[in-house]
Image 1: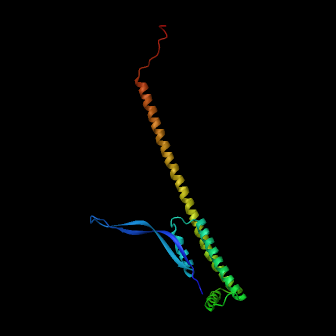
Image 2: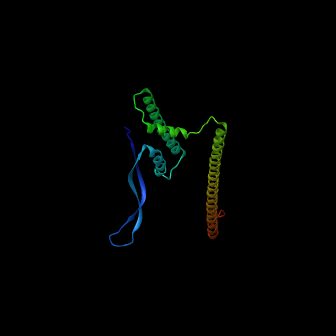
Image 3: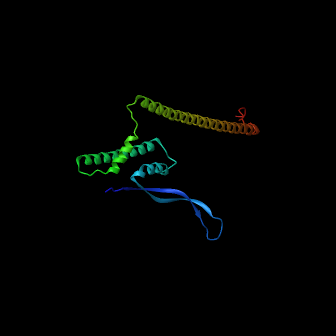
Length: 197
């Protein structure tokens, strides 16, 4: 007897909804958060996890979240492999009867694995992986250079704005001093008479 376990994923999806009005005015689309549940069987679990990865919060994809998602996927894979190992150990010890359909699925999965003993195949995998990682490295480097350029440009803009503010405040200060000098010139010179005392 084969029992299929279902996994239920809870997510809050944001989607467009039509807003209908009572007074007959124009309908509008509004975005609302709708709580939803997505169910998946074991075979669909990895695909659903892959789809839900971007639904969680599409605005924040940091390295930490990507690493934690990969870590949880690897833990799931490890759990599945230990279940397979336990099943095969039970079958070999005679504690469980052989289910030929499961054995055929396992054989198909194992036949799809590459033969890593072939040096040409490992060299091809290494070359392909290196090419892919080179693109990732170059894109990360380019993103860092663009971010640094934006930072320097922002710093220069702030510096120019501060210089303009300092220049305008100095000009205002000079104008005030000049106005004060003009007022002093307008006032008559009041000097005490030393001869009379």
